[in-house]
Length: 418
Image (cartoon, rainbow, N blue to C red; front, side, top):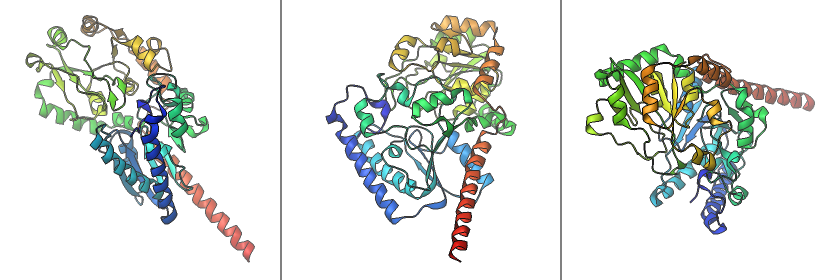
């Protein structure tokens, strides 16, 4: 059962596509049955993702804002991480059936990543699929932009599964990146709105950030006197079939040179296999926090971000703090996936391939924050912590307009009958 475009390769044989085709037509039939016998609940909103088993990130902040602006809506959730084992695929099939039910009966069906069920049906009139893409800005190529790359979908796969189709609206960080999402999703630019990234609203909540500091310092009191480095790399390979990750940083060397003043927090991408080895004598310097805190929380705590090709640095730029880029496979990554911009030109910080270069830069403390500010202003049209509010207001205003149009049409027909 192949459910993600990111796992396809150009040479995919028709035989290998048979499970996908079977699942596709099974889902179409199930969805058609739900549409035939069930009505849309105009007060129902469903949030769905296969990135996580819980409500978080962009979806969480939009859900929270919906409750503030329109508490009368009913909220449903379809969250399940995809696991590539045989049992995982069977479990996910039944998850897809639930997703079809929720999609057939919801006013809004809101997702934050690739979501297979959306691409194998035609949403019924009255339902809108809303994409809150998990990545900020535009850096790594995604979707239709990756055709022809090892990371991307094959032409044969696209004939059966029209990836990133059926989105009614997409919300992004800035007008600067609209053209790239239009290309990646194969949709008109007019349906892509640069209203901001909901999860970044967290950075503008002083109360939440102060509460977080209290929690982490109670749990790790030794961090109070340290500046915090956050290492947050992206995954390699293809979605849930990613390559094993080998940390290119030499943690022992970092501890030796920086351990007196700094501590290293580590956060891996949700798709990544755990490739971080922390020796016993490094545990007073390096902390692999795993699922203890969200990425927004860790970004808000960090004094300096160290990343590679992850778009978390777009979010971090809102804080106006130093960013370093560290990787040892840039050319390979370009050949397998590529970027929308020239990577070395676009990043708002120095690029390193050796740990000693990175540690020297940190120790010297000569950071170019003007570069970070210029980057932030280019890739965020709004810097105010109100992204979720704009998005929800936009969705609700459209609903109000539609209700008025329906009422006016009803009145006209009623007058004509008289």
